[in-house]
Image (cartoon, rainbow, N blue to C red):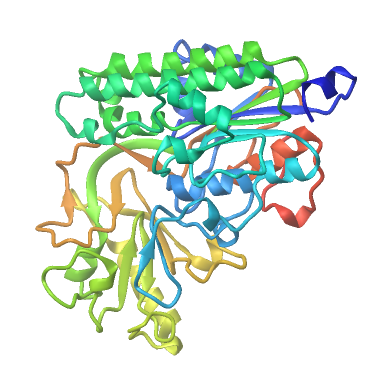
Length: 448
């Protein structure tokens, strides 16, 4: 359906969804002068903190947000997943998402969808009105469809994502400049196609906030040298959302949502180093750097973030944990994780979630046996390379993801953002679009 169809009198509801990777709700609530647009949406409709998904890693979060089902259905658990029956791993891309996206449900109902910069969508779908894949796309030219969009992006010298390597430098000036440049380019792209007004569903994702939070969160909390740059970045983001909101016709509902929260990072925690020191993991040789290097007597291993797997007979190629002892060994590892103490005796893990609690669906064969949700300050990494310590306080990042305190803003008077989580976003969008779906199609429920 195009613009001329609507001019002929079609009154199909329309929705614009602006996704933000890593915006904590409390940041907006605590800094209302920085976020006048989001504060106004909360006043006109409703807003609140929502829970993320397990694990709260962006590659797992975006498929959940855009499908309304858990990773057991999407088949994506993080930036790196393991092959079934193998120690090989792969980086999940768009075709690895095994559940139906909200825009696919919309197009099946005869609607037009524009989808820009959403992570874990490469390669771009050719059956959509237009699509630009987000990170981890290899390059802009291969990430865009159709030709008109590719041409515009080439002429605009468009950047897909912020260069995180710049954030590792002690002088963050170049990093901040690149983050702002990426934000401005992204906003200009969104506003260009919002103003075209030829879509029924618009989905655009701002991902630079996640990078900014990783490297400047400590400055924000501690009034560090880059605190004002941090707030100015978010002020610009809010202003761009305001421009999008002002450009939307009256028949479009705006929804703004984030994937996870953020908190202070004190230590990078190398989980496989801890497993090795505690006798759970061993390697074939001293020069190990990947899952493929684990030894035959290993009982457990970990993938980022905080995903723990038993080396199970019949599932892993060289599994040593008998299936008959699965529950006993998993309970032993759970107890060890719950008792794990960091520097100064602080508990590392807030809680341990078993696979059957967090994941259900046709694609749970690669699910972790346990997911450790850390306490604030402890960012759980895999760390296959040999390490001289488990806890590293000297990394360049000062912010880490949290399961709690993602954000959702719905510019609709009937919205009720309460006791909600990431699973509720897709059904909310479908409800606002008046697109039918079966109750069992989504794990979440509409908030409108």
